[in-house]
Length: 131
Image (tube, rainbow, N blue to C red; front, side, top):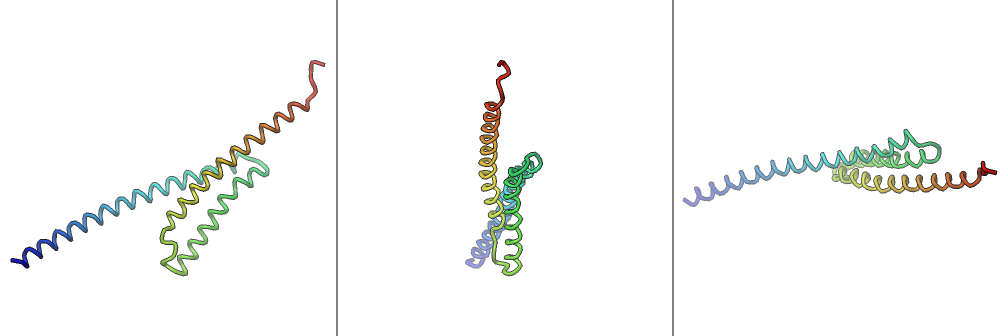
């Protein structure tokens, strides 16, 4: 009798663990998709800026992409040397995406402020046409 009870208990525990494992798989997949979407959206900002900006602003827009490239090389090299390193690499890429968002907003704000100041300075240097 005890064997039947313990056997039934172990089957129900196994079934619960299997259901939990399947649920964890779907949650992990959802989180990975969110991380991928945010990372791609974040990478779109410097790419668009590279296309539209000129001179030194273009270099500022390229810096996050250069950083991402170096980070990916570091992750790949680390994983090849030690398979247990960078186990949370999607989180590392997501962290880059969030830092990139802050950096690009600051860069866009600085660009706008400097361009307005340049326009105001150019406007005050022009001769008055009414004279």
